[in-house]
Image (cartoon, rainbow, N blue to C red):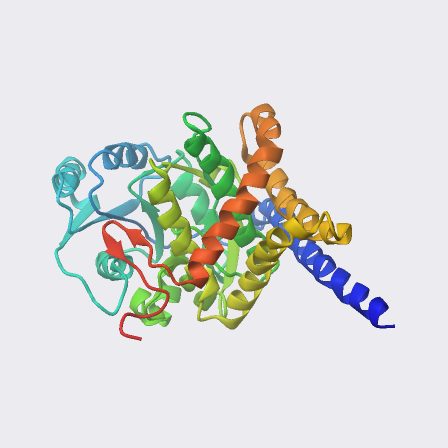
Length: 385
């Protein structure tokens, strides 16, 4: 009897995590089917003004390309808020030159302060929002390239007055070093977890470099400061706003941005530790619990690998992890990757690498290793606590 119970418990965990990923996959696919209904909804035309917010620190190399992609938008009736956050290079100068070129459409904020009770991104974003004129605010980062229909298509979602947040897909150039190619696989895959949750009506997070929010929804929560200290302000915003407003995922290329890969492994690790800490120590119980279940199962499955030769039944754990991750990776690659052949060739080794890499990142997060971003150390909880 004891052996039977042990076997049942042994199998219950892999089955549970597999079902969770099946539901997430269903959420990802539901986003695709929902697109047509939104486009053909027949809702009243949107009359809201639009603001685009870009906060940047030491981005003189990337910023000009982003600004050119803003100039090429198919929809022009929007203002632009450029926020310089204590840059030591030519970022502010580039912003001022852009304002001189476009005139009153552009506002430039030069911030030299740092709020100790918030992360720097929260602080500068709130400063930028205070200068925005739009009822719809769209956020992106200086290291991104925007498609021509980016602003225009985002607006179509907000014809529905119940939608408070919409976030879109991301892509990276699939070339260069192994690190660059791996990031083109890794980050869209991670993003599908957020897309799946939102597709199920349980929004938990997103990437803030491709995010549109209704101004009313931001004001209701007291801006980014109203979230309290968090290392992932975008994910925290989604979790809080999603309790009252509908959250949607744009799953088409008209809103899919291209973002720049990290140039070295140390920056890449810091980035992932910060994201992982945001989910692992989220203030939202549902987000925190679901995230921990997924990542801790992954870590457990790899820790059991050395025992698999003695107890072959344990292979079900790492095999389930591979299938779970592979499901979302495959959907991400087939839906959004331009070169599907190269994706399929790399699918197995990159999925295996993801399993080991993200387990390593999770261990660092459990140990509360402080990640760095733009020279600033982050902590899992508010400094001083």
